[in-house]
Length: 130
Image (cartoon, rainbow, N blue to C red):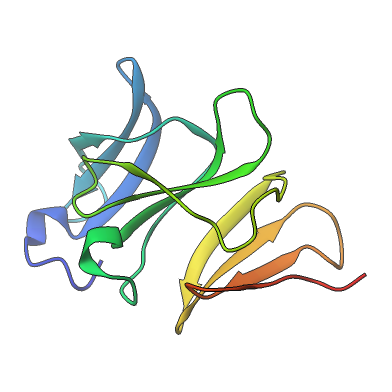
């Protein structure tokens, strides 16, 4: 995280379990890690920093929450206080997905072949056509 002002928190990683819940770990060098904060339990799990989002929604988690298989969005200003977000296209199956930020879009890739790349801005999905 090149924008992180605290050099001891420059690198970030999510551990599946630290104690009773998943956790965000931080590091100055990417070798020695320290507990930073608990993060929401979702599957599959993608934590990203969206520099294009409003500061109150800078940190995002994508995945299925609880027993559902539907994709959910949680957001946070500080990686500690999480809120449910609205997806531009509700009802999408989470599947085995991963998300990342590229330029001004959040991109997602899920298992499923040629039509598995998703992209969306803050207002709309760009879903593969059939």
